[in-house]
Length: 274
Image (tube, rainbow, N blue to C red; front, side, top):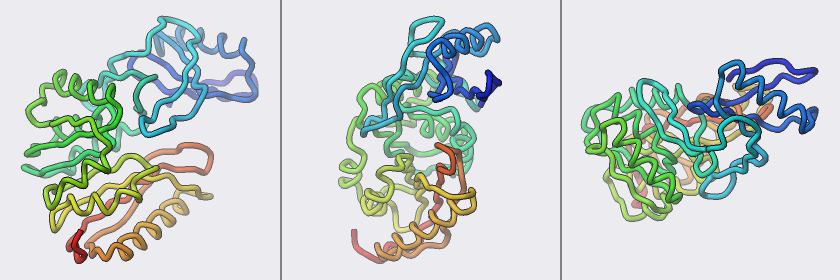
């Protein structure tokens, strides 16, 4: 994440395509934000700068933004890991901080896998998998209509449309219609990963991977990982599911001492009939 000093504050901002997003800082006033935004443009980081005025919220995971400087638009083309993603920073969820995680998952998928990307947003995980692996099929679903439209566009832009089926739906309800189909399931929405775990397990084949993304507080990354592993181990036991492997790692920070953690679970036997 790019940053520079301004007075007593360290200004951090996300770059998505040619757009920059600054988060609110209580030490800054309105005039400061305009000065900072023009500095970002003059340094060549972006063509447009926005101030994030609210956190992502709701099932569609949107946020409020205030235009500060540059071109007044919210749509951009973002490049990561040798593929392109069309993103609307106001209408859909996307974070460039998951760049490395998109690549990691893309390279984990084995040939001919059936993959279910729940809560898929603009399809970043789906595109990474389609570009870096040779899956049989990726189901990419999201309740946000605009996100699903962008996923279709991104599949076309990257020439992987034949590998991705895009469905606009509540991923949890959609998964209830699947049974023993997928080799790998992605759950990149922290608010609902635990809630929809039974449906995900039902949709999984007898053996397969689930990658659950969640948010945890901790004094350190190790504390956050320990809490996540504890909770998901308990959840697997509660659901009467046997597994070969369950471990977690931090894929980013959300706020001070609050971490985005992924728990990788390889299920070996769905003892319970889902």
